[in-house]
Length: 486
Image 1 (cartoon, rainbow, N blue to C red):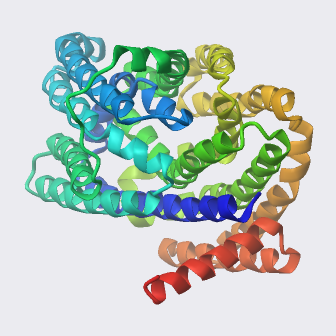
Image 2: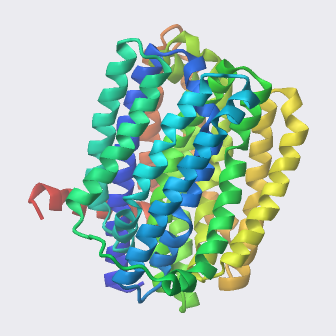
């Protein structure tokens, strides 16, 4: 990889990761405070609407944002056309949700979901005004600006949510936090990013991006529907409190997974697209991305599964104890998530959204089959199904990676196995502490986290894997730049 592209990639990955980490870190702290103030049932009510909101939001993006990133010669007319189209779809999607609100409430037998759905639908309209700015920043690998925006939005919206929860507004504090976060994010994108629309709209421009964007939209809709299907089923079959426990466990697991996966997607897609015609360079880039993500994600997931019990008891109190086994199982399901994203980005960067759609259909057929078998045995059984689905789908995702760039699943497994072994050794050392420290959850949590960090760092320093060396050098360089104002 040439120095210029490598530098841009590492720079983008650095700021993308810190954007997601900072934003999710603030949201994590806020969620801990809210979990102490609110009941599991109130989180469950909002989680019931997740699938409907996510599907509607997928329509607002429409796949055209990714099409703008993939297309090399986009102009201002293209950007304006997508901008106005997104706003139109945002209003339409919000209107459909408002009309569907009584039906959603009847499905769950929860009348309060009618006003909740209508209030949260405003997010679709607000967000549609900032999609272009966010897309263009991603295309330029400018994640530093996005980091500043997301941190400010997360902080101030969190304050609003906590203050309302403290005053007894219950579930509406979660709604207010969501709406204020979307509003502030969109407002700050307009303040800090100089792009402005003009009165220009080209149907021909949208038509030119439609073949790429429409297939990506279909794949996104399918993935969104089935990713949120678990909340839909759990909310219907089990209680709102049960869904709240599942969602809280999912939130803990997604904090590191979403940070890593989102950072990887935002950086690797434009980078892979820039070298899409050089298969040898693309394969080297994919191998480096996979091993780097494995080095980060494997110890995080294994470590989080081990510290789940003291973590929940210390941060959330005993009322959230039922979510501990869900969190431990979800961490096993999350081991491969960032690796799925990298393999899918290979297809997208090659313009093969048709293959992306084909894989999405196949994977989700498997997901439905596993859910149909497991849901009657309880939430834990559902998560076991997710673990099986993640493993099987990794083989599906890597099939076309092997076809397009000659990087087979067995090569990937061979490349990834040392990092899984290192994380496993760390996990054994951390797990042993629970037999030494008993009766004090806070002390056990601190000891396990500290030991895990020291042990994993020591193993990396001993074996010096290439991703560790490069990340360490990059971190030192960035810290030096920040220190001297570069």
